[in-house]
Length: 484
Image: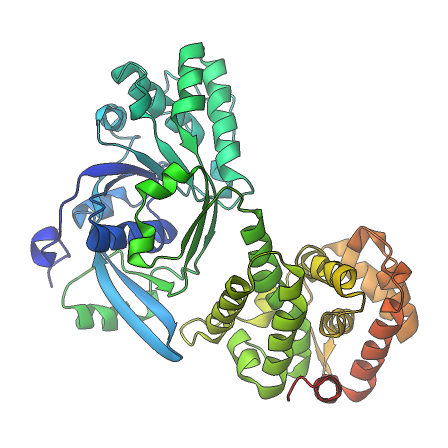
């Protein structure tokens, strides 16, 4: 069977306008797919030159396939499970700077180049004092980027229209700001001059971003079946979920240069990404964290099964729409759309997400993902969020380490594990609740000082420990009209 290539696929050729640091599954299923969609629907005419950011990578494999690969997007569409695939053809060529550093720097001489996209892992945006301009190449991504930008600055005499729009996708807070800071540090370390610094500051745009798409990657277990279906060999097949979100914080000019709206892509251009980050953390991550102890103690092991369960699913939906969403500042329709997308993602039959895999470090996750919703709800509504506090009670029960007589393999830092072990030794529900809520090391404040909170959590925990989670949750949803 032939290897995927441009002749076989009748692939398009585009003007090289994007340099991309990273060739892994995520960028190919996320950013490159979006470029592909804009090329098809909006004549974006943006070809991608991929740069291998570390010594070991997939550049040769990509070049062997002429930059082509097959993307499967799996998930819920119009209420039904759907799996669709297509060949992505925006990558024009790939460069390995460890084998051809001169070829790497030559990318900077292209007058059509406009964008930089990257995903070099969270550790990729880091300053390495040992990197030098004379290195071939420098080891770190920011140093490689600085060298490329300096070459471009020299080639075009610092022309303002030859600056770049730089869109990092690494999962760190304020990724664009951090990348720019390190580039300027190298400019200083390497004595590249004030004019270059001014060019970086005024003619290049460093965007902060938020990215969201689950990408399981290469479908190793079913690749033989896929190969038969496709009729060609593809060593770089990648799978991703249908949902996607790319929030790009930058000036209006960035939006003007990326025709995302024409294609219906879920790319949000904004001058302030924080409400979107908060929405993701509170709704998506907060729902996961709230669900884990409730669903698992109920006797369910997977996220999808939890959402599809009539009782657990109703509880979770009520928490999301009636307790988390009211604490956020985006328009109601945007919050509801995102919340519905989250539930569809949880229902995705192509992704089996175990509750226990989300349970790692649940105490710290509750503090960052759920507690802000609790506190904001109390502030705005002047009442307690019953569903979120039921989850807190379930969390305390979860750390007892027992599910219907079977031990739970708890995973948290040793301090948290030892704390709960000591508190549960006597089995005093009210004592456990008081000590847990008063633990400022967990929450950053003493939660027993919030009127009525301790009593409500203790009541829920007593019900869970005496009746069992199934009866306790059924009673909760019936008493609070969740099933109606």
